[in-house]
Structure formats: structure tokens, C-alpha cells
Length: 469
Image (cartoon, rainbow, N blue to C red; front, side, top):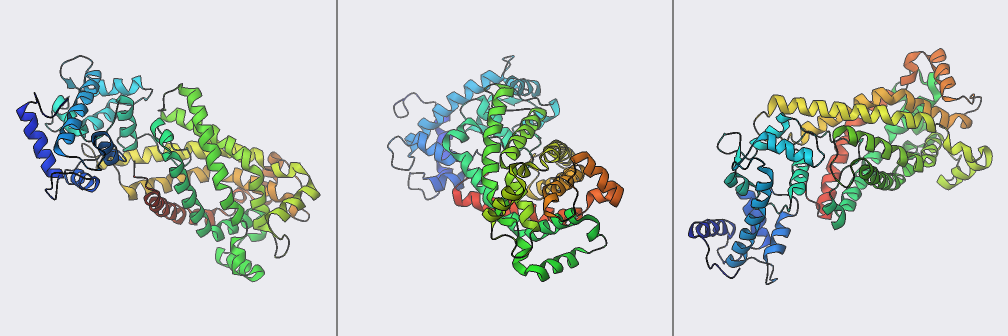
């Protein structure tokens, strides 16, 4: 296409009005900052890195700006692509998209949604209240959103929280092919890793107190958390509160990396080459990926427990502790407690995911019916905290037995029991609530851990240039 030859005058005026809205300094050029601020002022919610993609696609002379001719050429090409997508959605060719057609589109890409969920998507675009989307509504909604096909649109809706897909810390995040190929995935994982390291370090004293209460059982009965913290400080000083935290932070990188790679492979096996999974499939894939990651790094879990329990001067560091275990107990010591650890993944991940999904969906139905389906940060944090708490209640007895088994050989006079025998031993000596020893400090760290993680994660994404999805 050359210049504006043959262009519809009405379309020309519309393009001119849009250009003038974006060209805030009136110099006849739109740079990336004007594009970003202009789209925000228009109330548009484009996908991540939309401004860069628009500029890259439209800037034919590579001067870092769009003049009016480049801008109009880009929009004409964009409208052609959007019309193809609109026609593919409009299955009955009546010139309008209804909820059933949106639902069919999602189903064709392997995502199961209800008519109610499809209605929420439709309402985000429906300006005239007809509960259908015509071409003009579709065009205006996606004009500055550089999505290339319907799979991109579905991924955008999913990542924009338009759908309740049960996002959960227990299930690995899903990345689109585009995000994987662009390298965006490793930035997300790095941001999450740094957030996890800061969060774990901030709550490490409570974590160590939990381990001591789990392992020493009835010896800690009636002892307050404050007294427990004071005893740790008296025995080894302030620094002793962070024993075991070094390896707890060190295992974040391999665990996250292995979980991500395993999840991607399992996802392909479950859904072929589709990049979207239904909630149940994400739970299965996430649980399997978590089990694989835990299997790979489990010796580090044993080391973490032993280092958290060590007395002052017992080991000089992680390597010395590992050598001592290997020399005195053999290689099998590094797998103690593996079975209850593995069994605990399923109830934790399943309940965490189910509760999160239920709470978020309930909030959306009660407070955001017919409007934006984005619950906001505070609501998501509250849902995440509640779901994590419920998951921990269900899986905590298995976590306690795992920790006891990891520590058995390091405690003088402690019987070397199997998982089932240890369950019976704890209940017989300490009662049913003995299985929940140490859960109070564990609960106390949930809210600060989630809050610290979120703050650090969002700041790390900004530093790395990762925009919110």
C-alpha cells in the first residue's frame, strides 16, 4: 500500500483523530512514551509489551517513531488481521459474536469454560448492551492489542484474569510459546526466585522454630513460641535463628527450573501442542511436575532439616553436614521421609488450587457481576493466603512425619521408624494434635511470606522489564 491512495475518507478521519490523541506534543511523530501514555489515557488494556510490538511493526523507516503514514498503514494491516479473527469466531456468519461462539472458540483450543465465563468475556467488549459483539466493537477493543491469532487472544484473556482458571502458587505458571521463545519465561522465574529467597529469609526464624517443634514433639508441649525463639538465641545467638536458611534459599533455583521444564513436557503429553490446559489438567501436570522437582532436590531438603536442628559448632557448613551424614548413615539417609513428602504434594496442591478457585470465583460473582473481572491485588492475596492455609492443614501431618524421619538419626535415643509406624508412635504418645505440632509458627509466616513475595516479585519484574500479564 502506498500512502493513502484509495483510502476511505471516514477511515482517514478516524485514523487522524487517533493519531492526534496519541501525538501529545503535536510534532507529527508518535514515540513509544506517547504511545504508552496515550493508550492508557484512552482506557485501553493492551497485552504486555504492546507498545514495543506496535512500534516495531509500524516503524518502517526504523527511526524509533511513527509518522502519520506509518501509523495508518499499521492500522489498516491490523484491521485486516482482526477481521479474519472476527470471521473465524462468527461461526453462523450473522455479523455478531455471541457467548456460545466464544465458548466454542475456547473449546476448540482445549479450554473448557462455562457460558457464564464466556458472558464475562463478552461483557468486557459489549458497549451497547446487546450481549453480542459486532465488528466495530471487536475492532475497537483489539485495535492496539498486537495479538496475531485466536490462540493469542485466548492466552491474553486467560492472563488478564478474565477467566477463573485457578491460578495457584502450587501449580507452575503457564507461559505461551511466544513468552518462551522471547526469553520472558526466565525473567518471570528469576523474579519469582528472588522473591522466594527474600521471603524465606524474612520468615526463616519462624520456619526454624516450626522444625524444632515438629521434631522434639512433646518436649515443646506448653512452650510458647516466644520462649522457643529466646531459647534459640540463648543457645546460638541471633544468627542461629537463620540456621538452615542458606540451603533453603539455594534450592529455589533448581526446584523452580526443574518444575518448569517438567511442567512444559507433561503439558505437551496431556494436551499435545496446545498451550492451554483445563483446571483439572493443570492440577495433574502441576502435581507431577512438583513431584519430579522434589525428587531431584530432596537431598537438599534433608540437609535443610539437619542444619536447622544442629547445635552450635556441630557442623562447619552445608558440605560438612553432608559429609557427616554420608559417612555415618550412608547414601540412603538423603531419602529419609521421601514417601510422606511425595504423598503430601497431592492434597496440598489439590486443596490449594480448589480453594483458591472457589474463593476467587465467589468474589467475582458477588462483587463484579457485569463489570471488569480483575479482582485486584488485595483480593488475590487474600485468596492465596486462605487457600495456602487450607492446603497446609490437610498436608501438615505428612510434613511433620517427613521432618521427623529426616531427623531421626540425629536425635539420641530416637527410634528409626517407618512412615506408618511413626504416625502411630506420635498419636500414641502425643495424641492426634501431636501431628500438628509446630503449625502455629507455620501459620504465622503465611501472610508475611505471601506479602513479601508479592512486593519483591512486582519490583523485580519492573527491574527486569517484565510487564504484568
